[in-house]
Amino acid sequence: MSRVRVVICRVEDEEAGERTTEVARFDRPETDLSVVEPGTGLDALEEMTHQHGQAVLRGVLQAQWEATDAAAVAAHRRRFPPVVWQRDGGAPLEVASRFGRLTRRRQVLATGVGTAHETHARPGDAALPPHGGLVITRGLQELACLLSDTLPFVSAERLLGWQTQAAPAAETAPAAKAVLCASTLRTVVREHGAALAEAEWVEVRRLRAALARGDGAAEGLRPRLLPTRTPRRRAGWPAALSAAVDQALAAGATRPPRGVRVADWERVADWERVADWERVLAARRQERADAGAEDLRRLGPEVGPAEVVASADEVLTRRPQRRHCWESRTARVATVEGFRYVSGTGATFLATLAVLCALCQGTSAGAAPRAVVFLADGGRWLRDFYQATLAPRAATLILDWYHLHHRCYQVATQVCRDKPTRVRFL
Image 1 (tube, rainbow, N blue to C red):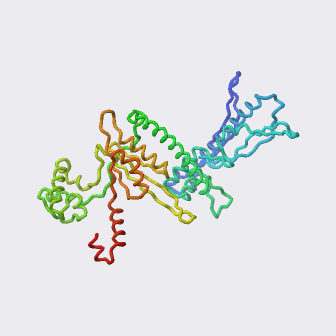
Image 2 (tube, rainbow, N blue to C red):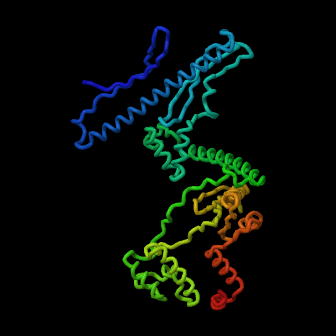
Image 3 (cartoon, helix red, strand yellow):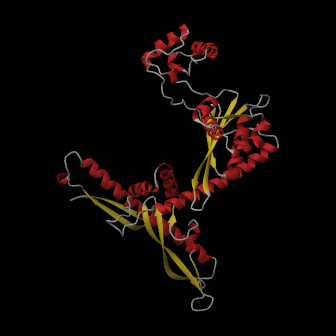
């Protein structure tokens, strides 16, 4: 019976030629297709090859680590007389990588053995990142943060186990260790978030200093925006009714055609008020000169070429302490070139938002600055930010309709005695 063998060797170049030392070998017997269900032979081969490949990659990583550790020990001993540092065994190290959990050994050197000044050193630790026990490679951290960005931590734990061919922790196999448990994933995400926030704050301070010097229109200070995508708006009416809508607009109809909802029709014509109807209809006729009824099916707000539209809001989550909340602030800044989201907390978030608005508002030399339109829900922190930062730049504050209506309803409930009075007030 034949089999496939993968051999890992260490090759050392010498004057007489290459000297090869076998490090590990992996044998993979051929798959007996007679015991495999028909139509699944290729799937079985792929699964076994994947598992075999992970084992080979772990062996390669082990060989590379041993070579790196030996080189670090040799370099450390060359700096001192041979009798100063002596080998004193090895120290195990647990590593979580994209190939699963591995146990590596680091050579330990000792000096002053048997005296009060006995000292130990592990030269191979210089190649390791800062750690307190388990070492998590950067590749696995990036994969963990990517999965945790869109999935719950428990689901990310299972997917990491499948990706690295590591068995997840379960009640049926309590001895098995997941490559990273859910609590460790939370810690990794928090540490990466703190590092990104620190790097962002450094960049914001640099940009604020540059803007204060008046060189905001320099080439290196242009905002990095994501390209604008076509909005995924729901169509207001079936495509078959586009011809009927086109005829109704041309005839100046005040009511929508059959099959078109009133709410959708109001986007192209304010049919309840005649004075506004003439103005809106004239605007829609002008739009029809550039776009047909098919484009009117998906009407919505668009950013003008001389506008910067910014919107911000926050979410508060209760903390265990009474009357204390976790805050998460998010903003979106959009121009005709693109858009960008900003998130954070406290004054750092506001400083980042202010810098981004300033960079988007500034244009090339000789052109007028863009007008900033700030959409908000009327929160006190948003009003203070507008008054202190955006108002001096001739920005416009617009209160969104939902919160305006909600606030007026609250005031009406407080000042009106009964429901008929409140209805007349509103």
